[in-house]
Image (tube, rainbow, N blue to C red; front, side, top):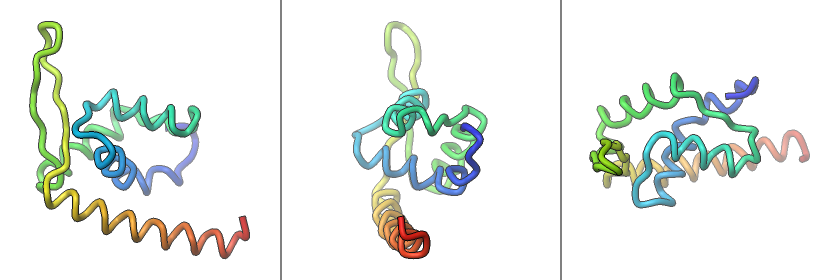
Length: 107
């Protein structure tokens, strides 16, 4: 990520939101989508992304499947039912948080 530590605390929320909009995504695809949506402001590193993906998978929030693409294995991640519930709850919490920040900073 660029020199913005504010994104680090919301990386899980960002990943879950990206996955909620797509059926499934692979890691590099997530990094590029986040970068595109933020016009280059959010640059997720592999060092930040993959440990979190492994944790989310271990917690049963996401699952993965491997598909062969052009003779190479590609690991796709998708939300589980538990993950869909958690994503919705975290999004509601994030919206409240952003509303409160907006109120404080009068953006």
